[in-house]
Length: 264
Image 1 (cartoon, rainbow, N blue to C red):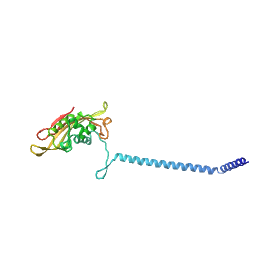
Image 2: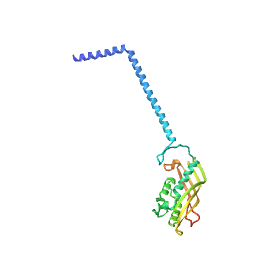
Image 3: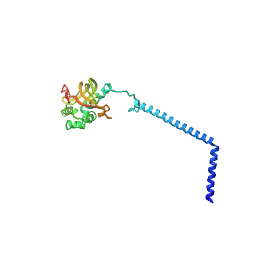
Image 4: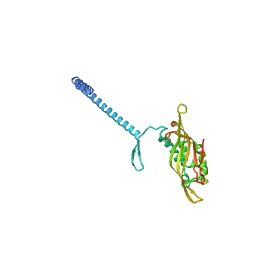
């Protein structure tokens, strides 16, 4: 009896729903249309917002890529501009010169860390002096032979007390600079040139018990190759690799002309 009442109750409900649908078809249809239009509007609004955000982010990224921001030591924010650079650019040439002068042209005070560091030979000098070690690692692909003869002559000048205490570079000039590209075969670019360096040399002369200060000019020859795909990394963004260096060892005044060494 109870089951029969429940069945009749369910039938009555479905009949009422059916009658409601039949008599209110236009209301339901209008509701469905309204719901569809509302959802379409909201989806379109979300899509527009996403597209606007994408455009803004793209603009932001492009702006930051083309205008890198630097923070100076004093806390000043500097916005720089990017511009294309080639191997013929003067900025690249100066980058090349700085790598040689900053790492390889040194006086006794600097290389001995204020007379606290001693070396047991040219090999030890290359391995333990941080600037030489850095240059070998970053710009010769680990090839110590590039500066081995220079390091040997430099070590001899140290133990014979012939290396000036201070060598301060005051000017540089590129004498020759040749570039040869071989992209089809090796994919590398080859360089050869000579740099003129002007420096102030200050030497302690024991025999006179006084300092000798003079301005000198000497030349550095180099050969190198550039292959960003093979050699480029954070410390060497252009992928340069020195293969030969001709660097004179600057001596105290008892040697009037610098002793020159060359690697092949």
